Amino acid sequence: MALSQSSAPIYEALTKHMKNRVVRLDVPGHKGGRMNKPLRDFLGEPCLRCDVNSMKNLDNLCHPTSVIRDAQELAAQAFGAKHAFFIVNGTTAAVQTMVFTACKAGEKIIMPRNVHRSAINALVVCGAVPVYVNPGTNKRLGIPLGMSVEDVEKAIEENPDAKAVLVNNPTYYGICSDIRRIVEIAHAHGMLVLADEAHGTHFYFGENLPTNAMAAGADMAAVSIHKTGGSLTQSSLLLCGKSVSEGYVRQIINLTQTTSGSYLLMVSLDMARRNLALNGKDLFAKACDYVSYARGEINKIGGYYAFGQDLVNGKDVFAFDDTKLSVHTRAVGLAGVEVYDLLRDEYDIQIEFGDIGNILAIVSAGDRELEIERFISSLSEIKRLYSKDPAGLFDHEYINPIVRVTPQKAFYSEKKAVPVGDSCGKVCAEFVMCYPPGIPILAPGEMITKEIIDYINYCKQKGCLMTGTEDLEINYINVIDE
Image (tube, rainbow, N blue to C red):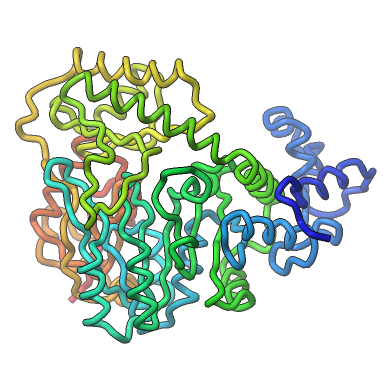
């Protein structure tokens, strides 16, 4: 029987299961919430009753043969992939699966340096060697852009033994590289193309948006359905083309993914896919309309710069994601993280993140016009009440790394903790980053410079959430003990 995008196999099986009078002599131990009534009251009884264990009628995520298999097949069809895997360990697990599938210890992978920490974490675990392509930079915004085709081609020609190229599609700020051309060049040299589409779910369903990885011919793509697709946090898809083995990819996934897959997460993926397949075009058109309106109104305020298609240059900004509401704040004399804090603390508006020069608001069809207006008016008032001379603000955020050793060797080396101020000239043995977005300022194996130390201190001063170091206060940093 042919599967239909209007069906949701896991949801249907779970709904049927809930109608059975099943005696719960298995895990989870809360027994539908009866063991933990405050949790049941907080989340709701239906939620706790749906939090079940794998069983024959509900299939098994590690080795799906029935409803999970059907749900994954529907997802593959909806996203234009050969295979799709439900991931309940977050898109981090999907990104790491891509790297583990493509590379073994000592093998090279070409990637932009402004990758999410999950990609470099994968290198720490599997021992693959990064060949970094420095992204372009926009001096006004101070943000990393995409990779130019010329730079990727140069890296491929200089490293013909590399196994794969990883592409951000898009970056956190909505910037896309020319993924179609990168795929053509990489495939001509026998390399796989892996796409981090943590922020690109809508590319598969919206109109007039940048090319999605599967349509571009990429071999694998990690897609955060929970970010812009409507599923629960931590749920994700791993999409694969015909060039990779479904069975082998599943084996790689099962090395790290839980054997107790959450049915709450899986059913949310199943239902989100159905909703996107049936209604995605209209949903993302609404999101684009909201953002287009907000971008225009914010730019009328003055000082702020809500950037968009005007950045596109056909090279390191090949395309721009119109659903991204990214706003440069430095001209009003405020770091992005300062505007982020003011919006939350003074106006009860929680945006996605603020860095030292920009803020990002994630907008979807689930937002309301009144909320968009409130955001715009709050930015106007923040400018009126809090703006100051921008002199002295940092004017850049991306620093080209100086790589001394591989991430794995550095992370597992003998190390010592030194004060951040005394670390100049040493080789970092851990991560340092602002989160979000989780792009490392320093990754294991990179040289610590005065410029980086000044940047870390500035981020701390402005209130960025710093993570990655063993020292939670970020006063000390682990370096290779040479």
